[in-house]
Amino acid sequence: MNTTKGLFLFLAITSFGLSACMHDPHDLQDEKDTTTPVASITNPSEGDTLFLGDSVRVRALVTDNALHYTIAKITDDSTGLILFKKEPYSHEQTSVAFDSYWKIAGKIPFKATLTVAGEDHNKHVGSKSVHLVIVK
Image 1 (cartoon, rainbow, N blue to C red):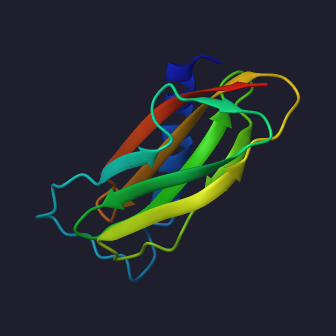
Image 2: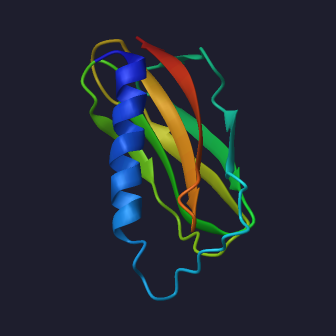
């Protein structure tokens, strides 16, 4: 699966899953909210070469005036397998920070993508991705 198809699939699945919980009674849609959440990744960086067996610090931030859902995940580009996933509580938060470690497992080199995304109550989705190369 190429990276573009993988990102589209991730966003489609995430959007479907997020939309399914939009009927929650404490979800407050604000018609005046036209702001899309902003996602940023501070570590790792785009194109970083990482080593099998290492622990990599994953640091990211999602901001918005009222978040509903946030996620950070790393997927294997060739298989789509989710290698790392964090979904911290973010309801009504204005800022959600990710600061975790990912232990790189496997026996053969591969390419992976870290994607961080956030959705607000009006279904605005903002995301950021970085592509990684894993070597022996």
